[in-house]
Length: 232
Image (cartoon, rainbow, N blue to C red):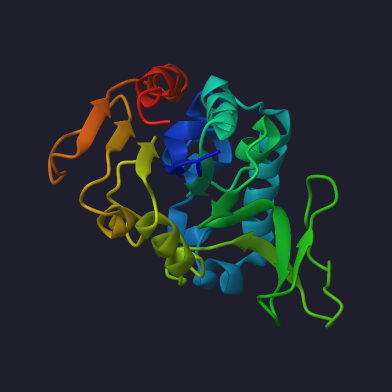
């Protein structure tokens, strides 16, 4: 039996949009009252940790009510034919809940918290709330396990290595405009096919390898599956 081809998938906010998870700027209510700098930066945490915790508690509650969409399930199904590795900018767990077995989170995970004293000490959050006073065994406050604006992305080098080894690269639901994640495309080998699924995809700054599927995640992954039949 021949080795299965390595299919690497980069996903962004558009991947989970069909599951009802809105981007930061689309959120209503509380989120209209605050800039990203007030709830998603190290400075925000220092200034008002209660607000930051409340913001992520609300996002976590929203995630608890969300379900994976057809796009998530389609990517999980591709594991039957390819060695699939997902690299996601999303902090939700919808890929895992759909059945994908290899998922690397670039920007952290919403259902986890980490120590403010030791960033490598990460725990699962019980239920949907993290609270001031929730301490790690070192006695330090737990914070959301999220990579905030202005913080380094610890998994970016691992992601680059994965992309450099890909036989096929798929990009779903991301503008590829936010670095360092946007730079991952350029770690892929020149000869491999690249597919970009996004209803608002633009050809600006992209190379000739890319096949554009200008549609949502569910429809796009369904189309992708048929196109990949020739590459399996």
